[in-house]
Image 1 (cartoon, rainbow, N blue to C red):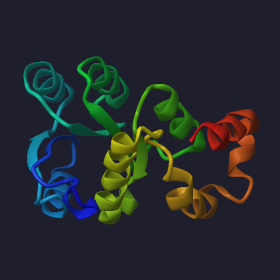
Image 2 (cartoon, helix red, strand yellow):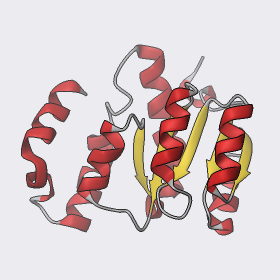
Image 3 (cartoon, rainbow, N blue to C red):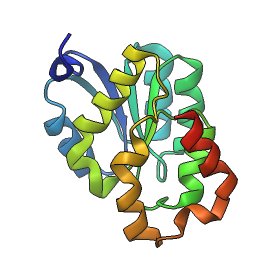
Length: 163
């Protein structure tokens, strides 16, 4: 399967309380089978009663970390998406909670790149986060400052080693 075909036909749940975000992601992921939810209870119901390859979960507004737990339990690859929970602490929390990635909403124009990285990692038996730092380190530097990884230096040293 070519890298461009990795997303074709994948069933993806998107849970976000902002309808414009749902619509935008649906447009970007038009090669996928998209199911949308705007509330925690909808997302929980869908995760518990349907099969999904991936779930893109907003952190704020839909209790994203609880949905992350459910997705992991159901063996759905969870991807955290955020605007308001944008912080080094939430990156670490997402990683430690079992998310396959953490994507800022203002980077969702590249959602297909991030999701293909995850699926390629799965195919190759690598960490889902193997390209995350390469893709988003400079973004985080601009948002949080050059020393953003000093908040938990030990975590980032281990992260670089394990990804």
